[in-house]
Structures are given as structure tokens and as C-alpha cells.
Image 1 (cartoon, rainbow, N blue to C red):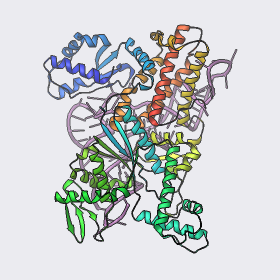
Image 2: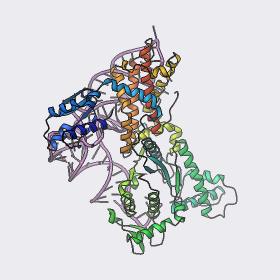
Image 3: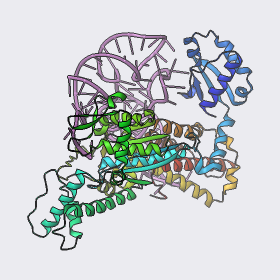
Image 4: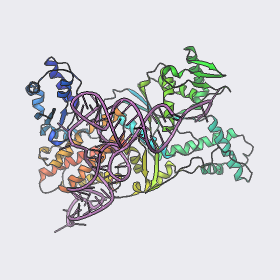
Length: 539
RNA sequence: GCGCUUGUAGCUCAACAGGAUAGAGCGUUAGCCUCCGGAGCUAAAGGCUGUGGGUUCGACUCCCACCAAGCGCGCCA
């Protein structure tokens, strides 16, 4: 039973009464006294000029078989229609969860459509930063959620493995190498000054002094890419593909795409450069594709990359970008539109920055001097799961304050431990029950209608709403909803545990309660999986 | 100067397409351990949702103006 079902049936009744009306919503009730679901139908009907009396409508509903079968009570209050589910229906969810287990909540909402999520895409010029980490956590979780909801998901990393930054990287590594051998060499000011290049230089054999910068560039790229992949691995973030800009360029795709734009009169020459008429598609100004020195801007291969994505026939493209790229959205949307792809099918999610704190103290980061806390350092200190959780608890478009002291605390202040404790607690109760001779079959066939305590009903309603919540997270592309849900569930469960004993002398009641605990266990498991957070067996 | 994002309890955050008395956790205060793990629970205090207008049955949510913070505004990537 969910809101959509109720809406469908209401619409049906209205249609039968000769009223074609769908501009209303059905939503979970705000409070217990309002029942389980509410609708604003009465307001909306009035608003749009339908003169149906409340009494008429209610009597229509009360004549309907479906509503009579499913609801205890349907009443009007403050202009809302409130629906009270029959309790027997609430218990049905237990059997559903116990049989569906890890696929409980799974849906075909995505209709098997293809979606590509491009994220992290950090230049292979240094270790991943915490900004990349937040993107990685978000992208991984979003991929899991969409896939759970019936999308076919590809995770892709766009690798900027050529261009000026890579050249500088090569030069910087060569300097480090020469320095190690006592040769005076100074890294350019806009080069890379981080310690990691010194470490890479140490691994190189003697006799490379006269190799050119491109030799060092290749070494640096490979080493750093390895480092990045190790970090992602430790963070439990997987990519299906690393899309190399270098290969894209050498394949001639960039030229082709520019040719295509040229054929459609979407480019023009001005002051020796080639411009893309992005203003035709809503951008503030036209953008340069080929500079007057003949080289490409960043945009040119990026358009080719997006054209490649489009030809791979995705129904939806999702890009996760940092806030510094927000201004870039109109031009890439323009490019996508110019390729004949509907720009709404490209969704760019801006993942805001994270500020690190130790308690009250803000940790200052300076990328220029190579002094910043890397994702790896953060993971090593706080742990990958806690790190992920803190990243995912906040909405992507909000700035995040990350308190490392708090994240490390193994106390009630830390939501990660609060959740993990609830999970482990469920495991313990189930193990205890098994120990006392309750087996799975017995639990599955327990009389769940014994669960009448308000706290039990509350847990039931909470776990029942899991599928709707997941679908909503998928629709809005908001991962944080899952994190909040799990925290809520942990809360009602802790509270229940404190007040009631699950396993005791009353066999029937123990069975029913063990079933409930197992449901909580399964739902938490599914939720944690969607976040990409590992599940502890003990703490 | 222009554009984008954000502004909700002391702190960190929720509030589903505009719904009913704006909710959680932490912190504070007062309580709870012979018992399935107290890394937990119960309760109290805490709010003019940045400010001022507007739209309507109803606004944290939509519109306008202003204030504050962050980020953008290259033939950089």
C-alpha cells in the first residue's frame, strides 16, 4: 500500500463520477492522529472550480470496494481527507520483507533505462582531495540507488591525461628527480610542489637525467593514476570505465565534432579563433573552441566527450561537478543541445565543498603549496565508512562542515556509531533468539498481529515506507535521504529495544518480535548497501 | 557590477509536488544499568524558517526587493 495506489483509486472513483481530475496529491500523514495517508483532494477540487460536496465524495469513496477492504476509517479533517489503514495490512510488510530480503525496496522505476554517471574525474596530477572524496561517495551511492530502482548504470571517470597541466606535472617530476641527484632545478611556480612527486622520483632508476619531460610525464601519470585508484578502492568506489582524453584526441573525434558544428553553422571565426555559438542555446556568450594559436580549449574535447556519451545511447547523463564548474553548465548544455540531444537529459549536480574541522578549529587547505589533507589521510584517520557517511548525510548542494574529531568519536554524538550500534544490536538479538531455539521457519509463520505496541507500529510504518523513500531518493537524485532514513530507523529501533524484551518466555510473542527485528536488520542492511557503507558484524 | 548556490533551535541537519501545531541528533538540564551489548533509553528547555513585501484556503517551499556567506564571470583546466 502506498500513496500512488491510493491516488490511482481516487482518480478512478472521480472518473466514474464523471470528474476528470488529477491535480492533487496523496502523501504520508503528517501525524498519527491524521491516520496513515492524507490527500489535499478537497482543496484542489474547489480550487479548480469543481463543485463536489465533501459528503458526496466521501460517500462515493465509502461505496468503493477497494477502499472498504483496505481502510479502517476515512475521514475529513481541516479540509484534508485522512486514510487510516487496517492494521492487518501493516503486518503484511513483515512477510514481504522476510521473503524478499535484500531485494526489498527494489523497483523497476527506472524501466531499464540507461544512465551514465560521470564523477570524480580528477586530473591525474595529484592525490584525491576531500572534494573528490565527497563526489566519489555521492556518485557511488547514487549509482547504487539508481541501479536498485531499475536503471542500467555506468560509472565513468573522465581522465584529463593530456594538456598543459600534464606537461607541468612532467616538468615538476623531472625537477624532483634532478634535485634528488643534487642537480639544481626549480619547479615552476605553477607546477606541482607536493611531496608525492618526490616519492615517485625516488623510485626512478639512475640515468634518466637527460630524458625529456614527456618521459617523466608518462611515469607521473601512471603512478598517480595508480594512487588514485588505490584510494578509490579503499573508499569502495568502483568505476566501469576511465575515459581517456588523450585517446579521445588521438581518435580524431574532436575534429569530427567541430566539423559537425561547422556543417550546422554553429561556429565562426573571429580574431583568429574558432567560436562556438553557444548563445543560440542560452549561454551568456559564445565560447572559443580553437584558440588563435591553433590549440583547443578545454571545451572542445569536452564537447567531443559528451558527443561520445550521446552516441552510446544513454537516456540520462549525470555529471557530478565541483562548485567552481557551475558557470560551465550553460555551455556544456548548449553543446549537448547543439548535438541534437535534449539538454534536460543532461543533469549536472554540483557537489559543494567540504570544510574540515578539528573540533572548533578550521583546517586550512592550500593546494598551491601542496598542503592539504587528502582523501587518503582522511580515510586513514577517520575510517572509510564514517567518512562516507558524513559526506552523504548532507545534501550535495550544501556546504559541508566535517568535524574530524566528531567523526572519530565512538560515542553517541557520532551518528555513524549510532547506526552501526543499532545494526549490531539487531544481529545480537537474532543470534540470541537462534540460541534459544527459534528457527527461521517458525519466525516466518509467526502471528505478527501480536505486535500492537505503539513502538512496534511505528517501526512497521517506518520499514514499510522504505521502498517509497528509495524511489524518492532516485527521483530527486538526493542520496542524503537514505542516510536520514537509516538514522531514523536506528532511532525507533533503539527506543523499542529499551522498552521491550524481544526474546522471553512468551514463545508466540518472541517469534513475532524476532520477525520484526529481522525486518529492521534487513532494511538497515539494504539502506547501508545503498550508501555503500560496509556493515559491521560487531563493534 | 552580473550570474549561480546557500541562509531553519546554541551546533550539525530534516521537512516528500505549496499542506495541518516546522521535526531529528548533538550540546544543556533532570532521570534510567541484576535483564537480548548503557556505543543505549525517557523527559524538559530551546524557533518571528536572514529581513521586508507579494501570490492563496494554506508558504521553509513559489514571485519581487534587500542583507549575509561561498563559488563563478579567460583564446586556464
